[in-house]
Length: 173
Image 1 (cartoon, rainbow, N blue to C red):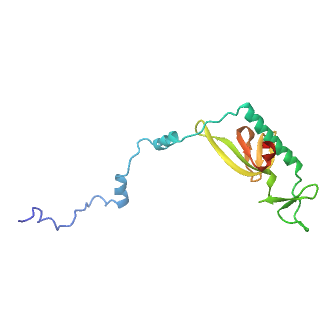
Image 2 (cartoon, one colour):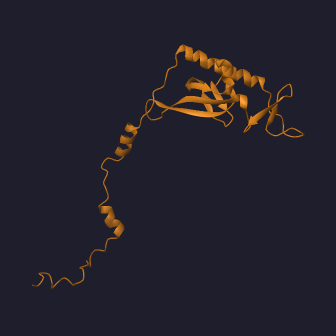
Image 3 (cartoon, rainbow, N blue to C red):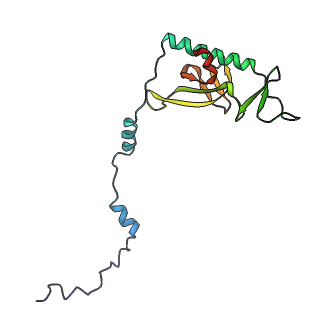
């Protein structure tokens, strides 16, 4: 039995003389998915993204948070600035007014190490997220109403949900 296409099966493939051969990249582009609505996928992803609602503190929580901020402010005022390194001082130590050395952890006075939970508003939709950062308090600015950490981070006081750290053992006892 003979094959019905036996007479043409070994002929070379036809190529057009009037049209150039399409590259493999251009041929693949013909079959790529087509997005009729540009930005639709990102809009769907944005809608699906979950944000948290801001937690409103009750009066008791506000008073407790204010006590912690006042304690931090008092501790900041009590501490002398770091003395210039030199002489026979040991690196990593701070001396208070009584020349009692206190250990600094990574350049941070251990009495000012805090963990702050605060709200960051979402720029695209209502709500936001809560972040927890740890660091050493550099200052509390009552005019700008921010807490400044030694790494330069500024946390708005009205966004703070909770502050914790070794310095607050005085309040809890």
